[in-house]
Image (cartoon, rainbow, N blue to C red; front, side, top):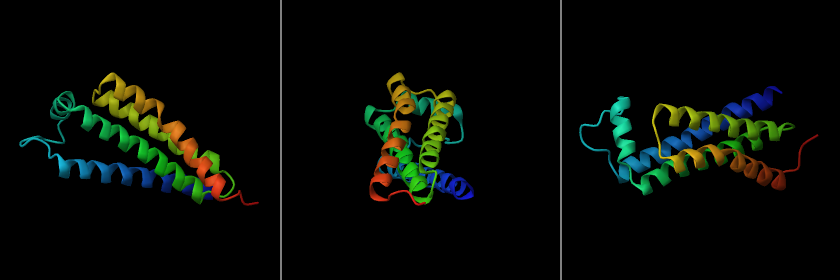
Length: 137
């Protein structure tokens, strides 16, 4: 079980790394407006309110890819409890999205998709790992 716990932690670390990489890539392509304080909730709320559909899709893609990549990592590292590891990452991603949209309002479609997609993507990652690596005994 300790290995499963470690797999979950490393899966979460992978998920965070994926989200950060995509966010930094987005900031490099479309820099935030000058004078924006990324530590200010008010400035971030204004930025989200004016965000284009493309930017919102990028945010959603980040959540989805992070969930898939983190769950894949967790399932790959876990030996016996792959489903627990992968789905735990998916559940924690849903919790993270819920906190994010509670603190920083997003359009309804982004919120609904962000809450609905991480678990199925975690399950898909699990299925891909199971297909490529049979469970160890």
